[in-house]
Length: 266
Image (cartoon, rainbow, N blue to C red; front, side, top):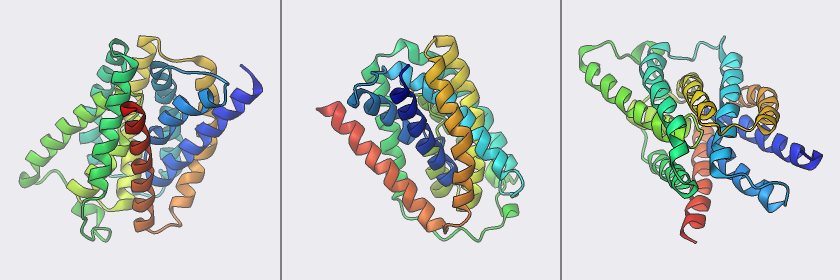
């Protein structure tokens, strides 16, 4: 591996992980196309969709672990929510992570594009002002919420399977679900989604390792960048208002979605 390639991978991992901590996503929504296009455009390396998904899975694991560790004292993680969504998504991501080996590169890119498109549509749906809701008001133990909990669990499993295919943790679609469907306050959503995506990344990483899609050195470089950048993102997020965080996330997902669909169609 050349120094230029190593530096490029580090910068991609740093940018993706900073965004991960900033807006509560695993970074794959940005990192996947960056890994797929930037090294090849610079003439440094041409990674396949399978290799990119493997590198992404490992990087997301460490990025979310680092970000959750940075948020552990802020009491923003809703552990009951993490239990319901996380237990389902980790199973789905394991199945998707391993099952991706049987799909073509174009099929993996299509899965990614569909996930990103859904996330964009959900992020632009009108949302009520819910950021003043107390943590105690967000509950699944009430009888009227049992059905919702089951639906959310099933949806999380499906999201996990689809995102596991592309080496993501599903946060870029979980965040809109939590904001729009569950009406979770933005800061609680960001912290809880990081915990959920950390669990999801465990399944995705194991699946990609079993499938033989993980490249050691690129993954190691991305991991180092993740550990450094994710806590910085979480620190900056505390200084931004929630509307800014949602706008950043929506614009990032929109830009990536347009790019990937354009490439698939062309």
